[in-house]
Image: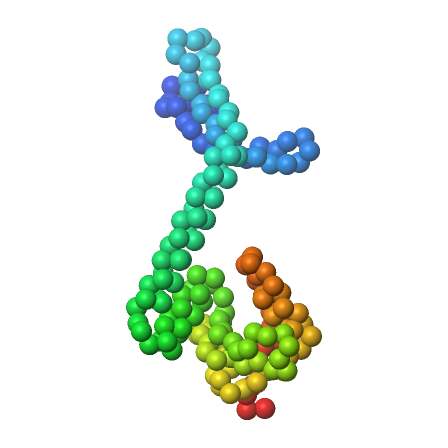
Length: 171
């Protein structure tokens, strides 16, 4: 403020304000020295840019979504070999969702007694199942999760507890 008042260049910056109820909102503050005024005066214009910031976040989110879909499309269309195609798709999913591991499981049927990991990709240092013949028992929680997956059109995410699926097929 003092720099602008002493004849410096106008400044524009973002500032977070707090309403009396505690909610915060982002503003754009523009400071300009008024010429010819004595003593020096600074004109401050404060604009609520909440809508602009939200629109930018939505634009970035949509762009990331379409870039991810393009990567997934390239993974699926880059080969005719089904195993290679699914392996590449799992790698893209691992990167896009920044997860530790991703699986192609069978069956995703809550009525089944068990299920297995047909194919997987994992980040370095993450232990995998590494055995498509190893069968997991269908627990009530897994049964419910599979049922939710099959009965919704919306994305589903689930954070698994450490060790929840760190089965050792040699046991």
